[in-house]
Length: 148
Image (cartoon, rainbow, N blue to C red):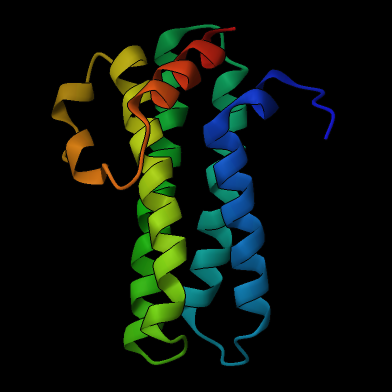
């Protein structure tokens, strides 16, 4: 697919878009009305939007702020998936691939935040906790693509 904007070149953005698409399919199969379902829709949409918006900022402070928001949205998505599973609206094993994708997304965002945020040392998650099949070199490439 042809890219038109710089944010489309980011691996983290591509992962976030793929996650958003997967969530859309999942949500269309849940007929029950649930606050977690609506929240998951909003949070999964917020994830790529904040990555894109942050990529368009010139200052590292602004970029980091949007990356932090995107990270928060990814964590909200993980919690919403847990809520849907514990309420038996979605089978627990069905959400595992989505949570693994979220791990990759958060890992990439953490790598980027360490580059752009002076507050990265205060973030609770340690990048090593999210090391499920993640190539550390890709995180560096993402941070470099984020700068351009």
